[in-house]
Length: 330
Image 1 (cartoon, helix red, strand yellow):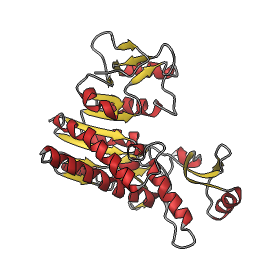
Image 2: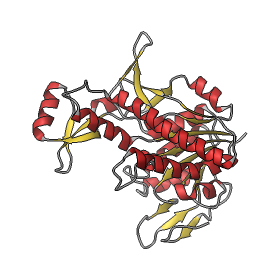
Image 3: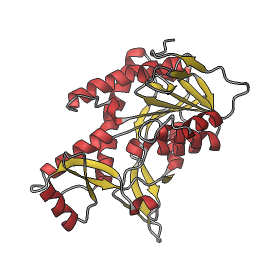
Image 4: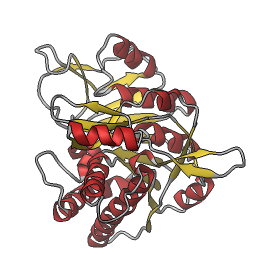
């Protein structure tokens, strides 16, 4: 059985320049379903992990606007809410597309708690900005009364910053594995997971943190014995010297080679860096293949006709570099 895991960002449902209305998100979910369902021909077992940055941001704005009328919600609960709402939109869109295609496969969205280490160094230096922009006066109040860490953001106001710790384990991963192996389409690990820490007595509590979805995807992929991780980005493949006159596209590359490119500064932390790190972690633990492409080229990339395939070790010297400045076509 071929086993796949698809990881994509929350901006797949809220695109740039959109207001983020539910109607817009429903339309975008329908579009995403049209791109995802054809992948099912290639995979007997299939899981989706989505980001939730724009959606959590909206929730936190709602919390701030309603703070004088209803009790505020902590970040872990906001993550749980977006897992449920986004899972619903995606599940409905996928179910409708499957019905139109005459394909019978069950779907299920699962709220996923992800354990992080309470002693993770990230908690001592929170750097991930979340939620709305605040005035200096409001920020000062929140820092004093709520003990929030806040930073000024490019002159636009102040924002809360939280930790981004590394995920340690997925809670109830055995149940996820059992569902996955039935051939059902599973939506799990949304937003990187609901962040929780484990107490000495074995109980868990939610924490104010953001978990990187690509790192969570790797944990899931290893636990589920996935063959391929499909990573959806805004570009059709990885490029060397991206955006420059000598831009080159990578079609297939070994892990050692792509890590060497990263050391040269080709994949900076603010863009492709985290995805390369996630790919390295998966390939080092499991082997398999990591496929990086945009939504429009997913099916072609799985067939080896588009995108970038990262493998643990290439059998021969690569002829993978194509000199181009254009979007590659199948």
